[in-house]
Amino acid sequence: MQKREIENYLPLSVLATLTDKKEVFEAYKQLNPAQQDFYDMEKGFDGKNEIPNDCDGLWDNIDKKKPNFQHLRYGFCGKNGKSLLETLFENQVLITKEGLLERCKSTGQNELKELLAKIAKAL
Image (tube, rainbow, N blue to C red):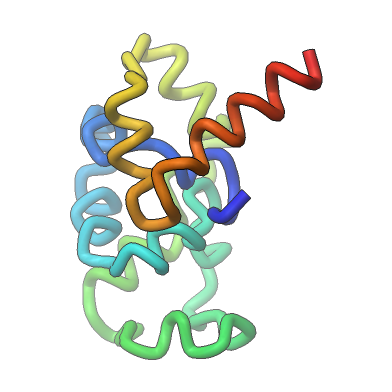
């Protein structure tokens, strides 16, 4: 996988449905594509007031004093204990092939096809 976790493949249109996480969503949209690919969607920065420094400068342009960083600290799940995918499933959010392909533009269109082939082979 070219992205951090499966949640990083979720299209922006899907994340926009999380109306109780609007501030996190707006801050997430401000991240560049590489940051969106490696942001921990569920935990954010683990609630810490620190920016990870183990990612070869990936987060260097983030100012932890700005509201965007504060919204990103806890991720889309915060402390509620539910996974992001579980929340989307409960809300019956539709995830389309087109949306996934759009989200894979930053890592290459073939990545989705390769991932689906691996899943099919494992089944």
